[in-house]
Image 1 (cartoon, each protein chain N blue to C red):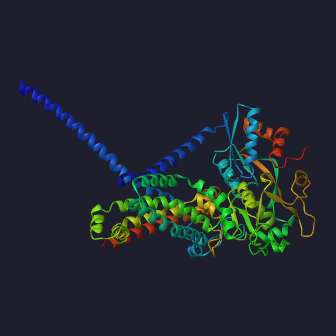
Image 2 (image 1 turned 30 degrees about the vertical axis):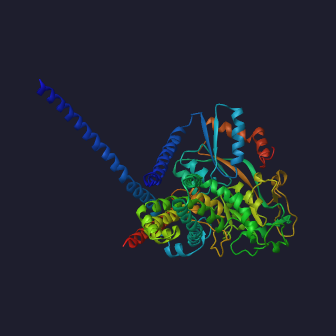
Length: 304
Length: 307
């Protein structure tokens, strides 16, 4: 009866999708052209998902410092940021890891000499559900939980007999997608430099998602930036070795290196930054910028 | 005088006619382009996906690729590209979704087309179309925030992001398609069939079962297969609701990861042209082949049924 009105619909959707795709490609091109040095209107700051909250807070505050520059922040991951830096769409790349040798080689090939700025630290917190009675965990035990072939799959092995609200005592491992900076950092410092993760973890696509899932899952454990803590999750003390006292991540424990899994956060520029970018990064590293670091839940640079 | 006028008007008519033929042929060309464009786009997309993935194909161990569940594209020591767990993930979520959606969808189609009154039909159609208009991110959000705790609670399982959660969402998303197309197929059966059946003394249910369903089977099959296509290609909702975990499921309460979700989650951060990036495009080719096989099978089955 009403056939004619129904059948063109999928085609219409297809056409709209394609048109949108074409439009997007067009936009991306334009953004590239708009990024010539000396143009002061906007500044693309792309990268680490761990840093996106912080970068956003900086950008908002900076609008009051220098209204002539608008800083546009987007996330996606450290790899995305550095890729954008290399193809010229980003003026600043945020990274929760240093550039790797492959990326450096690509930069050199493109005639760039990337500059690295240490802008803050992040404590990588170990999150469990707020009803989990566990208070402390060691790097070794974390390794056994997350490593391929690791032996710990049950909370019982950590001395937890039952978690209120949990069904059974199986550990639900929450992890990140395999090319996030956080995933790579955690692998290098906890799982083992040349080791792999145990399959079967729930791989979330963002720092916030890890904390949200742990908050809703009584049997879960996850790792994510300290800045993403909420009242619904519990942060575990982490000990370097089993038997040693555990340490909670905080500004003090990250600065004196007693918290074992903290990491530097970087900003990269393609070469010596132009004046307005340099001013922005200097402001980020100033007392005013570092105060925002602390307010956002990250760890500021130690005072000189 | 009279002849003169007639000549003039016939000249004007000829001019108008020439203009009309020109316009007509232009419009015809435009419409023809629209018709052919679908083919162009499909080939264009296939070419693009194939070109991006082709670089790694000679180096890729296809047996390991298809039959190993170890997916470690960014490993430092031992890079492994096995998508078995992802294929099983996609298939398990899709098939469970269809087990739920097909009876509901076809049942609803029969009800809307044959059993309900005019007003109920209009209301139902509006609501069903509304269901189809909900964006998949919203479905994914429902999966995480509503279904996740619900499944944990009702079935006493440690985590509610799993095959069942993803399949329920996909079922809800494909039911509207099955209903709309199924209803059209039933409506396309001429009323004389219904009248003849009634005249022979059949009840309404007998009419549906013995006359309408066999007469509309091609259209109904198309409805189901379009639902399958919707389910297997869905990305955002399953990315959020299945737990995104590389795992060969042993029950519907195990988290899994689908082919589509893997591409969505990893392509953004894989540096362009790297082996990881190329393998993700090979997964794209694989998905393309799966939908192609589904469509061709559908075609063959439909043709077979027609005989």
